[in-house]
Length: 276
Image (cartoon, rainbow, N blue to C red; front, side, top):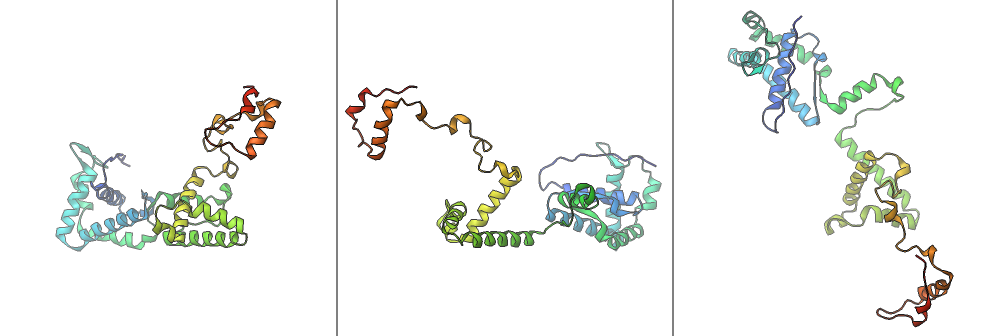
């Protein structure tokens, strides 16, 4: 049994990471003679990238299985990945020319393509979320969860829309609750067009609130100013009214009902002293 070389590729978008990853996947598949392809795991962050990765693997392998020219091209590409180069180690640097001639040719590529197509639904070319869901589904009893599944983008949008409309219908029964709901979801729209499209505006707010909820799922902290980052000093009233002396209270009560005009002072208040 030979040992494999690990590799870390750090590069910007569009520089060929998917190309290298697809060749490495095919190289590992060839080294294992196509046995148990579901044991190879290739993880991406988005469904789109996972789909592109799967397409790239099948396209490259089909090109090598179709004609001799494509087979020769794929043979050299896989050999570079498996054997490596002087400046870049391969998956199995100890691979020999005899192994190359025996395992990297058109007939073998057809065999590998046949195996992949047969096991297409079992291949682990997926997003990291999907992989975690698969792992969790095998340990539902230990994790205390059941009946969950990954939701696709379209179903997620429909579910959010239905939840929002259901909430709006519930709040519409009471005028005050409806006003609070509209203040939360419709006030401060980015533009007149957004304000005119109530549903779009509410969905934007819902997405924002959902991100906040993911950061802080404990319902007890929502509406708690301290948990939202305010200091006790910021929450304190601007003046310690409880420290007012009794002599100031009649004056404060009288002028809170009849506020003075700007620039005017109350001559009767000149003897009022307040404790700090």
